Image (cartoon, rainbow, N blue to C red):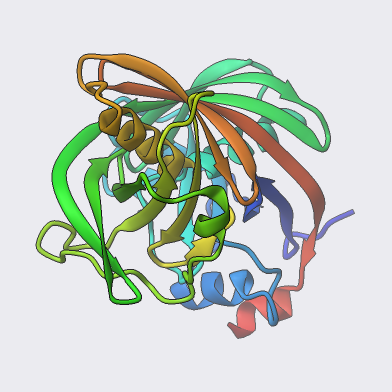
Length: 299
């Protein structure tokens, strides 16, 4: 039997964008930036792109983690308290919320297949298609998609035309009609692309993608703020789909369309209709265990 000092965790990923899941229903864990960074470090910790704390919104509010409940989120709703790999707090994570929902249903914390998960970007309704011990499939209502206007990313001295997109967190999605899947894979994303700090004062996730093909699909790579390049980014796939549709002449605000977004870690399906997006994709829970309390306290 686990002691009161044990820290349980699970490891999960959505299209290989990976997370440490920390159930903390009584909100006892102090998620300092130092602890999150150490936990996500792939040499000295468990390794992950980010951390998902599992708790109810009201409990987080009562503990002072939240100063107010975001729009549409009730005190009894589950809340995804998401931290980037560098310890910073992010508003939303599309792959993370699929893993979060999968974890809830697979571990018996939730029996409904349709419910709301709170995030700092607001309420996110989910539909759980499958939630086995290891594999899951989840659709997330990603909310409103807003275009912020044209902007430019710079990569290795070259400028890439893009469009700023708000999906609850900021993105700069760059569609390059000359890119192929092969030439996209050859790009060096080991260094953060440059961007306009006036448009993105708190940083931005940068997506580089091919144009829509005959199957309404694109290939995408992403550099996430606070993390670096990841194998996937859920909100980034929504931003990429919006940018691809816009580049093809479809209005994100008034039109509709579906895009399959292929990333290094797999693929997801994004549907956009009159400025709102839904994303369907997989989740995998490969492992669970106990963190050393001594290690945790030492961080």
